[in-house]
Image (cartoon, rainbow, N blue to C red; front, side, top):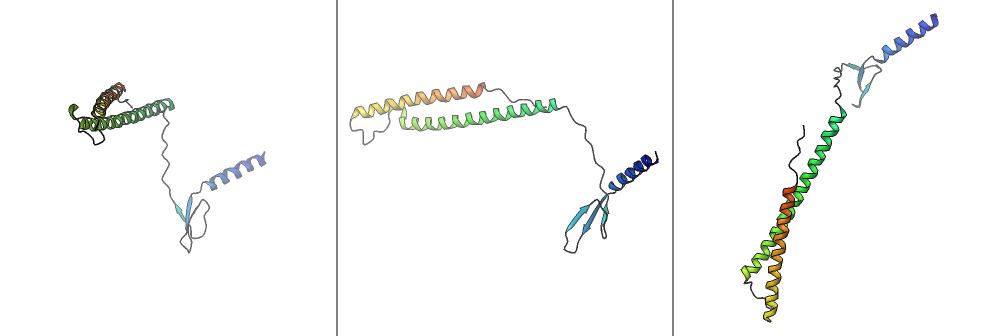
Length: 151
C-alpha cells in the first residue's frame, strides 16, 4: 500500500512541477527562447488567465453560413446581369446612332442602293433584337429574390 501512496505523491509532485510557468530567456545574440523549464538568466512571465467562450449551437452557425453563401451568389448574379445589361445598352445605343431614325449615312461600298436598304434593314432588326435582349435581362434581374436576412 505504501508504494501506491508514494507513486501517487510522486505523480502529484511531478504534475505540479510541469505547471510551473513560462520562462523567457534572451541569449547574447538577442535570440529569445520561451520554455516551461527554468534556466539561468531566465525570467518568469506571468501570463493572463485564459478566457473560455461557451460554444454556440453549430446548427445556427451552419444556417447563417448557408444564408451568407446564398446572399453572395445572388449578389454575384445581380452584378453579372447588370454588367450584361450595360453592355447590351451600350451596343444598342451604338446601333441606334448608326441607324439615325431610319436614315443612316450611306457608305462608300453602298453604291448599289439595294445594299444600303439591306444594311438599314439589318440595323433595324438588330435594334429589335437588342431591345428584346435588354428587356429579358431586366426581367431576369427583377425576378431575382431580394437580399437574404442574416441574423
